[in-house]
Length: 161
Image 1 (spheres, rainbow, N blue to C red):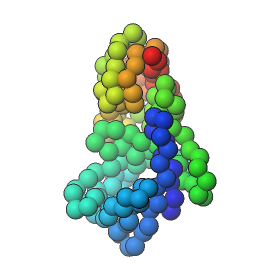
Image 2 (tube, rainbow, N blue to C red):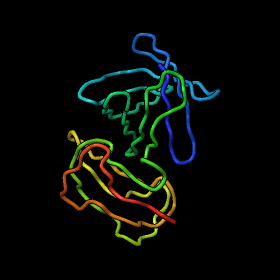
Image 3 (tube, one colour):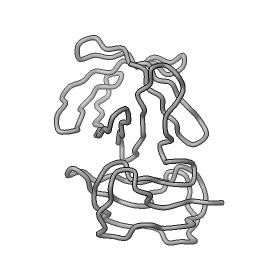
């Protein structure tokens, strides 16, 4: 299976080669071995090169949202051509990876943020998802509040320079 991942200003083509519960995960010229230990309810317990890893996955058609270590990535299944949406809906707009509820808003309009900083906490499918800044910038617009319910791909906030 071929996937395309776009994050920031880069596009990654990922080739996933399945053999039973094991996979060979190829990104560019780098290959990694991945083994599925358990899967159910949107949760995947994996071994990546022998290291335990838990991922949460939701999907809608060709799109997949994968949350690992509190970071959410959007993957788009592809027939081989480069295409797909950015993990953040574009470098300046952060989107909800799945339906859920806003547990906390950690920033305000005008705040300076840095790459990887947790901006919001969402709860979805009994898991906590940290929405993190994809780049350095300033919060230009905040479109959600604590306690609000959001839909998949709903705009959460916008970052500018």
